[in-house]
Length: 439
Image 1 (spheres, rainbow, N blue to C red):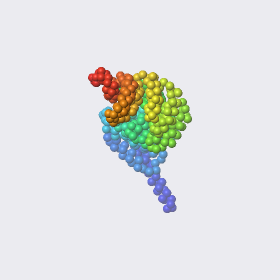
Image 2 (cartoon, one colour):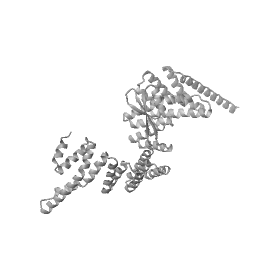
Image 3 (tube, one colour):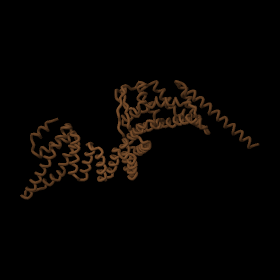
Image 4 (tube, rainbow, N blue to C red):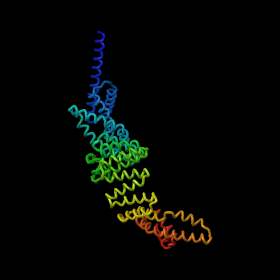
């Protein structure tokens, strides 16, 4: 009898708790359904959320909706604040924190999954509308943080927005870029791993619209986001722009971070796996080349760049990069040929002219040092004249490239200083005075 009594008592307690849970959930459902919550409504909403959240033994269905009501509280508070003041930045910062958005992401998606599984849609339409309405605001807030140079915070918001709506992985890509900019490499690594997992390329269309408040054109992750912003009246003048694949950049940055962390084998393996799936993707070949460049394996770098050149023979940047590497490996004549090739493809390639001019002046400091150390003996005077002639020949060869570089970038003070020195060395007084007089 005693055992039966205890069992009955336990059932009575469970039944009472269950009724209590149902009462709180009914209250929350009623409050959530209101178009506008009063101050008392908010207090009541919070009290019921706190009360039911503290209960144990919740059924799956109840727990899903308890978490939903709890996760929606920041959105309800934000909606209330923005109704009173559309420019309430403090309300944005308080309610659209990464933790709040991530809490929303889990709770809302859990409800969507549960209702799909149960076949009974209670909030499915409401959740989709909520995401469509508030996601543009979240994205614009993230962009605002970026413009304020709060790169880590912006990255966290973008990542949270991706968790909320994974149909738009461009937000995760933005998070990865900003995490690198913030030097938050652990987070960047996790973002890149997810981008790799979902095989994100970034190819497609970039959607722009002009912000009515500041007149600045701003990007959107999708056409739906832009339409939502235009619908609520914050943006106008939509414009589309085609964007190329970002796969190579993703793998390059991912491998670079692994290399920085001393995980070179993982970096090489990641690139190799990507190339095996996309053998003709020149962006991936360049990513692999960059990996070997950072690992100081210049021979392999040049081999891979040459492979890309075979596929893209009219890309001046490839030849320029080979010129830089050849310079670093003291293959000066090869470097000159690569820079000349870059210029032949793009006659306005400033850096190629500048670097080529610098190649002809390599070793000038050593020549000057030796000249200054020489005395007045006949042998030393002869050596001095030899070095002077050699130096004049070097500057004569370099000047045309620096003159062209200055023509392309007239305000470049570095090139101007080199030319002034060159004219002095060659005693070209007229050119020296003319350049000196220019402002």
